[in-house]
Length: 527
Image (tube, rainbow, N blue to C red; front, top):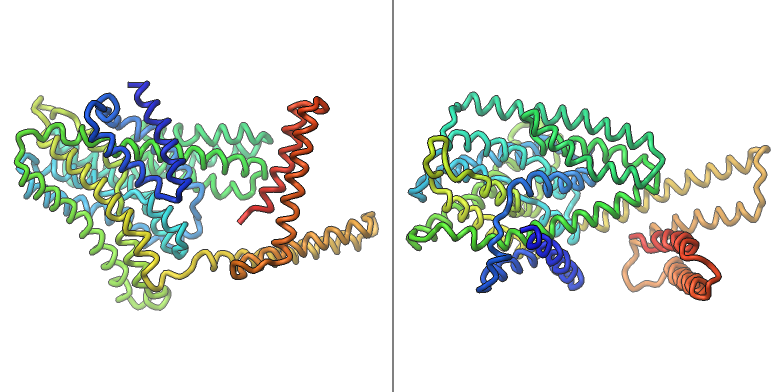
């Protein structure tokens, strides 16, 4: 088993690299690759590996949530609290109820409680792919905030509803009041644990002057926070998200070396974990159909279509209803801009499910507390697989096309460039004012030539920010400067390598010199 998982991990990263090389959606590419392997005769030792719920919930989920939380904006999330709350709390509960009733009517093997378990399992969308597509195609900032905020919080709602429904399905005594209490306790405990441990992590990292140690603490923090929250009956998801938002706010004031290292480390971790998760999704096909022997094909198709259509319809109806109905309230109508139809449709269509849903499905026990087989477990796993793969392929393949063709989505990339250029202009003016203050100070001895170089460097940074907005194909003076300086850096690098090969400098000296060149090249290539 461990060797097979290692093979899957290595294969997933290689496939993701190939997809990125040819500008393909790596997540969809991995899902299709997994499905293909599942259909190959004799590949049972790979495709027959059943997804371990603990692997997903305790190994994959915490770092992915942490990484997403670090990149989120607390200010933007706070400004869109109502909309994100409706998507992350209201929509999963509505999906749980609607899918539960439809599944109960269309799948004879499912009891009502078991049907609600299925509803909770397929309720939380995985917005990783949608967010990736949106960033690449320039979705407006508010749309990205809604999708990101939803993906951070909806797992907590759905997994709590899953625990309540599962308790009822296996025969544990429960009630609506007990379920509501469970939900509130999990949410409150998760927030408190996340806040406390997030502050502790920030305190520890702020007292260190060691970027390597800071990154190491950041790597283990999400696992510890998730585990502690779950041990006290709290929501591990909420705990990690809250702690990540706290850490992300502090990150902007950390040292430059820690920021550079964290960015590189978490991008690599995110790629590895996401690649592994989505390849595993595709590989679950044999496990999903294994228990359906003897079930009518017509019944399988009918129930699959009914559940799949319900998942999509509920999201469409919910998003449109709560995009426009709140505007009937005069206060909301006067303080919030009207929704843009194209943006509303993109949010309603970005409902791709992911590995958390499959992990929850495989986590359903084989038997109830009475010792009887769990009602309809094979059907539940199969329907979850259909929803996850179906939404990934349907939404994942159509979203890029829709985003390019819908009006009113705006050009977020250009808006970001304008905002960045204006901010750089203000920062450059502040830098120039500070330089003038230092030069006017009689106690500061600065050579006139050094001051001229600093003024020229500051002006170049100001001009470069505005020239990024210019039309493509126009060769600006700053672009010429960049190309020439990159060629000079390449020549320096070759000279250092030649000195190393001739034995004039050691490899350790070489690495130190190359690090300086790499930082300068990164500055020239940014944006």
